[in-house]
Figure (spheres, rainbow over the protein chains, first blue to last red):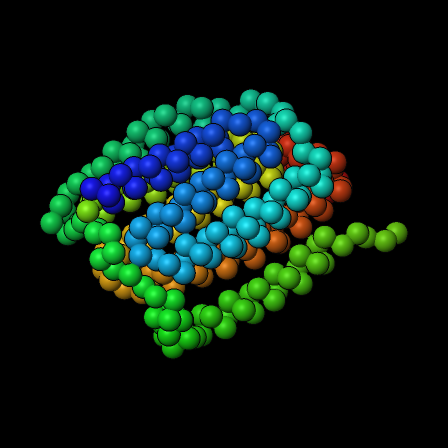
Length: 166
Length: 100
C-alpha cells in the first residue's frame, strides 16, 4: 500500500515534469523541469532498493550535469525557442508511431504475466559495499575503460571549447 | 507491492516523451537535454530489472550509463559552444552545413 502510494506520487511527478519539459519554450524552464524529473527518479531508485544509483543520480545528474547545462544556456544567452515547422514526416507518422509503440509495450508486458513478478518495498536492497565489490571484481575492465573514456572526454572538451587564435 | 510492469511502463512513457521532444524541439541545448531524459528512462528500467532478478549487474550498468552520459554532456556542450561561436545561432534548422 505504502509502496503503491509512493510510486504513484513520484511517477506522477516524473511524468508531469517530463511533459512540462516537452511543452516549455524557454530552455531554462525545460532544464529546471528536467531536474524535477531526475529528483523524482532518484526517489523511485530508492523505492527499488538502489541506494547508490539514487545518490549518484542526485549528485551527478541533478547536480553536476544539469548545472553544466544551465551554465551553458546562460552563457549562450539562449532565449525563447524559435518556432519553425518541423519535418512533415514527423507530423504524419508521430501519432500512429506513438500508438504502435504503446500497443507493442502493452503486448510485451501483458503476455508473460507469470514471469513479471511484483516488487516489494525493501525486498531487494543493494548496499554500496556490494555494488563496489561487483564493480571492482566482475566489472574491473569496463571500469578502467570508462576511466580512459572520461580522460578522452576531458581532453576533447578542452580542445573543442578552446577559442581559436587568429 | 506493485507489479514490475508499472516501472517498465513509466520508463517507456519517459522514453517516449524524450523521443518526442528530441523530434519537436528546435533548440540544440534542449535536444541535448532530451537525450539525457531518454538515458534516465533507460536507467529506471535497469534498476527495475535489477530488483526483479536480484542481480547487482543492473545497478552497475546504471553507473556506467551515468558515467558515459556525463562524458557525453561535457563533450556535447563543448561542441555546442563551438557551433554557437561559428554560427551565432542555436536553432538546428539553421545549422545544416558542415562548413561555412
